[in-house]
Length: 156
Length: 197
Image (tube, rainbow over the protein chains, first blue to last red):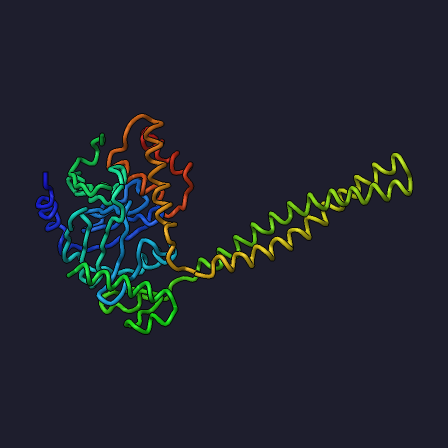
C-alpha cells in the first residue's frame, strides 16, 4: 500500500507551526518538536504537539549556502548547533523516493534532510518517526517502508 | 536536478575540510560550517572540545598504564637489588628483609616514574590522534546509533516482547544527552519494557 499521499496530508497539518526542541539523544539520533509545547510530565525533554524522532539514518541541516551540521559531525558541534538553532516555522515537509527520505524546509531558510545509505538495512533499523497528537505514529524503517501505527501498539 | 545540487553541496563541504588547495576551486565555505547562512540564525564559534578531551584522556590512560608497569617493573628490580645488597650485608634473613624493602621502594619509585613517562607519551599520542579536532566522526556516531539500537533489541529478546513506538520514544528521552554505554541503555530498555519506568 502506498502511504505517501496519506503522510503528505498529515504534513499539511504541521506547516506554519513553530519548529524547535532539537535535542540529540545518543550518537547522532535526535528529537525535533513541532507546534505548541505539551506539559512535560515525567519526560526529560519537553515534547511538541508533533514530534519527530530521527534515528538510524544520515541527515544534515543546511542553508542554501552551507551545511550547518551533519550526522557525521563531532557531537559537540551537533549539540552546539542544535542549541543555537532558531529554525522558525515549518514551511514545507516532503518525503522522497525510494526510501522516504525526509525533507523539511523552515522559514529561517534552514533545511533538514535525512537519507539512508544502505541497501541492506533491515526493518529493525528505523530511520525516522513522526508522533502525531492522536497517538498515530508514522514510521519509516530501514528498508524505506512507510507505515502508520498506534504509538501504544506493540510492533510485530 | 535537486540531486545534482545536493552532490555539489556535499563536495564543497568535503573540500572545505581538506585544507588543501582544492578549496580554491570552489566558493570558500567557513570550516566552522554554520556562519554563512543568511537565513539561519545560528551564532558563535564551535566549541573546541574534542582535541583537549582527546589529549587529556590519552594522557590519563598513558599515566595509568605507565604507573602500573612502573609499579611492577620497579618492584621486581627493587626486590632483586635489595636482595643482593641484603645477601652481602647479612645472608639469610637479611636477604629476605632487604628484598622486601627493596621491592616496596622500587614499586613506589617505578610507579612514579612510569606514571610520569606514560602521561607524557599518552599526551603526545593523544595530540596526534586528535589532530583533526572536531571534524567528522567518520562512523563514530553511526556506531553509537547501532549500539543503542542493539541495546533495545537485546532487551526485547531478554524480556520477550517488542517495544511500542511510545516506549521507543521514552527510551530516547531517558538516554538523551547522557552518553551511556550499551549495558546502561539495555537496562533502561528492560525497565521500560517491564513498565518500571
